[in-house]
Image (cartoon, rainbow, N blue to C red; front, side, top):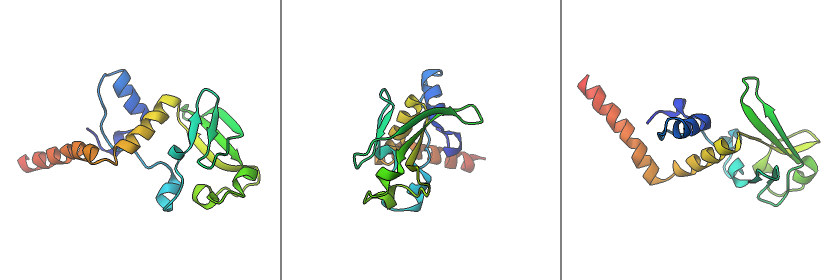
Length: 149
């Protein structure tokens, strides 16, 4: 059990696949926009068809661009764009994107498939009372250590 500073999707997958352990700790929020606005449509609300390399928004609009890239650090990512022409008339636009350009509407940055899926799964799990109770053991253990030192 670790704090949020040690938990990334890559770490969770590596701990599971290479070390055969479960890395338990909270992962960050879905997007910056989610933390800023109630009602924001998070990435997890989009349907990702990894094999077809296409994303569908909750309103039914499909992506027009899928680009596998690498960050300067070498981390693989996928940039997915929906067209501005599709997003502009959408009644949920304000809950979805703040894009100002005239080419793209909502943009999603995805991690590699397995990492993205585990991240979405963990974000859902950590909202449950069961996950919170399980993770709370870490806090209780640290409190006991402080009392004994």
